[in-house]
Image 1 (tube, rainbow, N blue to C red):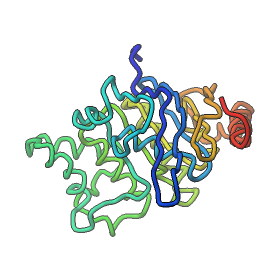
Image 2: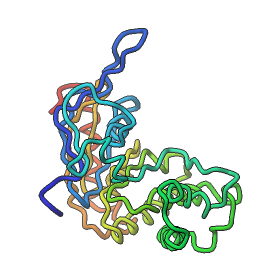
Image 3: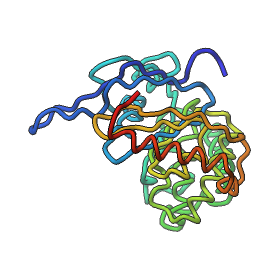
Image 4: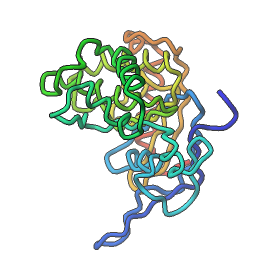
Length: 261
């Protein structure tokens, strides 16, 4: 890691003006995410988890405070292609093959044909979709489609990967498998990952740090440093350390209805 954080927010706030009055989505959020960290955001629906990610990705404009991404403004980071974004739904174009979907951002960015093909092959291998490049999305399971979405976000080799509850719609068995694969991918690439989830076990299993957020207005109630080793088999979820961290996350979610940090 370097001294400069990958993502840094100071007193970040975002208020939406609506016909029913202002909606305070984020309030005074201060957070620093180091390069190479895997940080999960957890909290009740409407607490600002996704809103924070969308601010990082320059999809929403904060109304207060400061936010930098790799030392740049979010809009500068977007133009510099500093991050890839994985949404809740895979969002694959059904008329394009899997390789064609992964190729799309590379086409927009003007990569040469040879470089596009090399990158497509490499990222499909990273997400264990070798041999599926000529398939169409409807020919793949939901879990495989989500892996293809991750491959598309990885194709242009951004330093930061933003993931908005990408496995929330999948069954538990598939979710466990993809959690294992995501940890392996993170270990191999060293990317900074910001991950939104509603699942306490998922947040604890994946993260180096867990950011617990309160109900609206979204504020941070706790930031938990994980004591777990970077290499984590699924059965680590039965360990005393895992259970203790999960308990602290649960307590932080309860505390969100009272005082905050």
